[in-house]
Amino acid sequence: MALPVKDQAKYWGIAAAAFLVILWYLGDVILPFLLGGAVAYCLDPIADRLERMGLSRTMSVVVITLVALLIFVLLVLLVIPTLISQAGQLVNVAPELFQRLQSWLTTQFPSVMEEGSPIRDQIAAIGQAIQARGGELINSVLTSALGVINVLVLAIIVPVVTFYLLLDWDRMIARIDELLPRDHAPTLRHLASQIDATLASFIRGQGLVCLILGTYYAVALMLVGLNFGLVIGAVAGLVTFIPYVGALIGGVLAVGLALFQFWGDWWWIVLVAGIFQLGQFVEGNILTPKLVGSSVGLHPVWLLFALSLFGALFGFVGLLVAVPVAAVIGVLTRFGISQYKNGPLYKGKDESPVPPDLDS
Image (cartoon, rainbow, N blue to C red; front, top):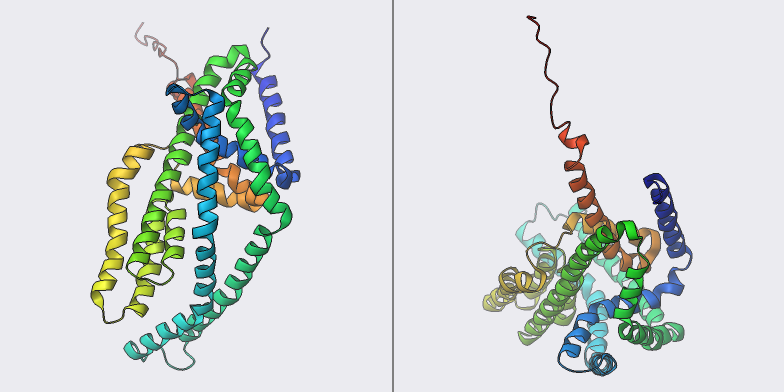
């Protein structure tokens, strides 16, 4: 005999509350396992593809691990040191850039930029704040990233967890399927397939779009000789998952720096702006339709809200689980709305009662 819906809702509510409590108290402990699970989820389609090509599951995972290790070594040796160096230099020269902006505004708009003007004081304050707070942020990131424990976590525990999860991924999915409540197994499988489609479109597809565009922006800006091009490209690629925001932030930073660096050489400034215009065209017409699809199911506003909420509540671990939880809530909400529209509460009664004959 199946449990009443009220009891089922109670038990699932308790399970959700327990998950949030565990996330709250054990965030730092479960961080490597969440990272490993996320990486294994993203790499599982590649392992399946290698299996279809004739490799065993073990050999597929070994090949993926070796390629990932090679990419990681290349990043550590070639990209990350330059990225850190340019980020530090950009923070240090921020006050000088804002002073140049202040001088230019004073020349163009002398009435607005008079001595003691609020706008002038605010521009100077922004430059000083960026140097002070930006330096503190970079120092904190470097000290935390270079700590012995964190290095061990990122360099040893996460790859090991990823390796074993990727190796046993299909068996874990099958075991979870066996544990589903039999009365609701078809519905749960349907919801799980929708959640997987949403996550696959967003995390795998949009993540690949961010990587491609970030690489393109960084390489293109460095080829035209723009200072801090690697940092700007990385920032633009990182926030590309929010429509137009990545190109807007990166474009404003790049064109702003180009104005100071190439002042008078307008072709170079136009070229920098054209890089982001081309990136937007390729993203909207080629990358996003091919890699993400027409409908991801995660509205940008809802995604930003989930990232802000979970990041504020659970820190970095919250940022990791924000997108999956947002996808789950989105799928469940759409399922609840469809059930509501197919139910009597929305449709009312199928047949209206016949009014009485008042003449008889």
